[in-house]
Length: 127
Image (cartoon, rainbow, N blue to C red; front, top):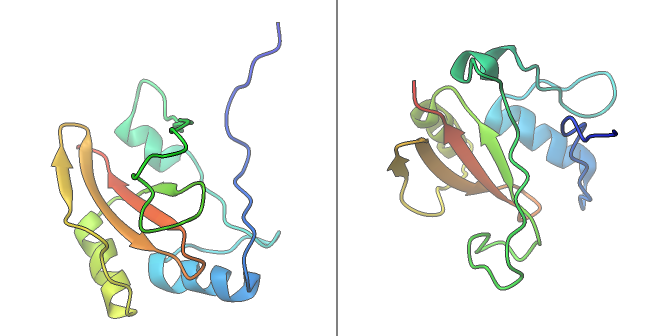
């Protein structure tokens, strides 16, 4: 039987790909790889989920308000190890939070927009 075993990548159309890559490096501290994107090793996320690190793939209804104020048909959820620090870093680069942070049993959340108007959900899993 053939099974899907994970997400191999997320690929984005951008008005200015170099500017978008620079923003992700500067604002979120992501380190570019040799292929023009960013890699996520699973070692750090596996520490939070010893039963198995995972990526969520979740369809939303076409009329969902969850991605607002973005008008794009998807958003990114990026796992972080320090939500307060990440949002402070973003603010120091002129990026404002979109809405109040949320603390839920499965983690803390904050939201920003990237330069192409994509909503970025920053998620710090519980310790």
